[in-house]
Length: 405
Image (cartoon, rainbow, N blue to C red):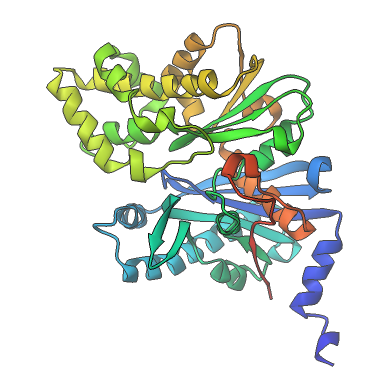
């Protein structure tokens, strides 16, 4: 008799599975931890036949106290199990509120939403195996409890995508290449989809590519080092370089740049991922001191670390992509840094540089849209990782499904 209950959550899951078109909310909080980026999208079909229409998107900044607490979790010296435990649920509440806010900005109601796809907030990532008592594993940790999201919204929630790829021997990152393949594989040219978030990462999709032809990996720092230096030189008054204006006033130091470009991560072969563990606070403080030791002005240091991001991105193309690149499609917060984009263009003569907006995807919406698409693939029963990018031994279905009300 219980199974006949019209509100049976398993029946609702089956109903959503059987739909060809779904209303999905995607949630993303990146390495910069500026806030929760949200998209409401209508997705039709799945796999390579996926089509979508963005209905609404927004980014809701974290309160200053919440952002400080998240940054404390990034650092093993200030992160403790009780803080992680609490913030896991607090962020779940914040993510749920973001879903409610985006729906309230539209004509829809929460009951109209079929799925929520949440990336969570990465607080630590160990892409190489570590051994303990005869066991060895890679690991990754994203918080923002999806059970809280499902409970507060009543909507089926798919979250924690990275962990299944790690279980299959992968690094759990990058996970957006599958989305890039869906969005851009029909283009008849060799393209790089270049995301510049806190960390920069690329997806190379050659002309006529299958999923196994994709090359994807982290290229190194994106905005993370630039933002960190800006925070130092402005004593916390600014958290980023608006339009790259500060960098535009400085001069790139050749010696400083050469030292930065000697970082071993840049020359490591893919698959590879990185994060604050390599390019975070410790690294930023070290290179700032080095820049001052060279007698550089603050503007020169900003200009040089901006060039570091541009140079490391282009070096990745030269080292690991053998074919001629026809077009680079840039997204993420770095796409708004005019000085950074100018530097990339100067290093790629003859290559078309475009942006996600040129393909009707607002930069702010790309990553949460990716989470919505990944959730759609999970519910459709489709494998949604890219082993050539993560190093996993096989294709798997990423994402944990939390039933709604």
